[in-house]
Image (cartoon, rainbow over all chains, first blue to last red; front, side):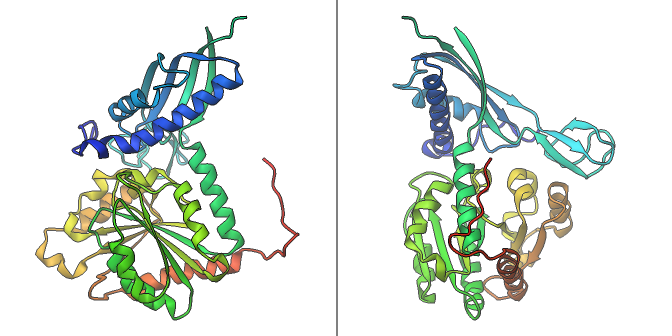
Length: 132
Length: 234
């Protein structure tokens, strides 16, 4: 695998990109909590695709800053990395992308498109419902 | 305890804003180019070569994205065009919200082509749509032929790839075959244009490419008058 090395960047550069994404997580979670009438979130599950520009370590770090004063201040933040899945229009199979090359893992054709693994999203949250 | 499925994209807000910008640009028939590269690949030199040619026929405006300072915007001031500088202050990329704010500085009725020079960085800008028609990636021979392998996301998203500094290729160990092979493993469609911005080599081909985009934008967008907008509901 070509990735997985810690990025050789200065501290601020290391965190700033992920911090803006962490703030986006905060917005999504705050919104969802509000809509579901909850003031406390226990768990936030985030999925990061391998074919996105995000470092899981840096996002974890940024989430610590982003959760302060939010409904998920004490929540467990789980960040899961997923592989890139390619769909082949030649053999119609779906395979995992290897070494960031656009080639079908089954028939070797280059006629592939990304199905998943190029995005990052908040998969789910676990909230505490309001007690009267 | 209550478990809620969300599946909410982290870039949702940015994508939505980018879509709004795109519609706004479509309405004004402005061709928008988002230029990305590593620092020092020659984005601004390329603009200095291309803009005077474009200005012979078209009205050009530029948004400059830099972490700090206005050095790039100052270099373009001599062309007497509207240039707006965005300083991102340690943020490594431009976001759609910054473009939206910058656009108030322009008269959109007087622009044919808006060039956005992104922050020099081969990683993060690739994820953030800005409402562009085309992503142009600039890479120089001095950076080495293995860049596509190292930055697959950006190379896969480029609509056109400019290989710059061809005039000094003899002084480097840049291997053209390996570069093309690596690019094509990531991106089958992108046109690759080999240029030298400072020597002016093959700049006409790049100008032609941009001109094609401007013309396409003008021709293919059907005209509608005020009060006759079509609204699409999602």
